[in-house]
Length: 190
Image (cartoon, rainbow, N blue to C red; front, side):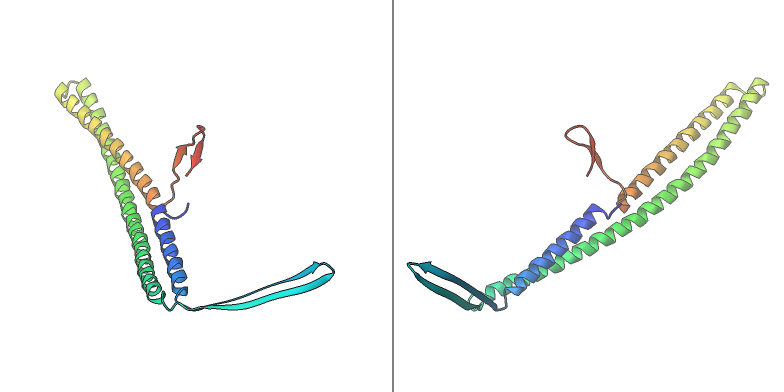
C-alpha cells in the first residue's frame, strides 16, 4: 500500500512548482559560457590548423525585470502548491481518524445487535413453547417472531455498516488498489 493518490498528486505538484521556481530564479543571474573548436586542414600539399575559442557572457539587463516577476510568481505558485500538499495530507489524516472512529462505532453496534438478536431469538423460542402449551396467544407468538426478525435485520445492517466502514478506512489509508478490467479482459492494477 502506498500513499493516497490525492496526497501523492499534491506532493508531485508541489515538487514540480519548486523545480520551476528554481529554474526561473537561475535566469536572473548572468550566464558565462565558454566554447572552443579546432581542426586540421590538408589539401594540395599544405597543412593548416584552425582553432577557435571564445567566452560568452549573457547579462539579463533588458529581460531582468520580466524574469524577476516571472520568478516571483513561480515562488508564489511553489508556496501555494506546498500549502495545498500540506492541506491534503492533514485532510487525509483527519479522514483516517474519522474512518477509524466509524469502524469502532459500527463494531460496537454489531456487538449490541448480536446481544439483542440472541435475546430476541430466545424470547421467540420461549414464547413458542408457551404457545404450544396454550399459555400464550398467536398474537404474542407473532409479535415475538416479528421482534426476532427485526433483530436479525438490525444485526445484518450492522454487519453491512461495519464492512462499509472497514472499506472506507482502507480507502482513506490508501491501502486499496482499484482493479479494473484491462482492454483484453484481464484484470490490471491501476
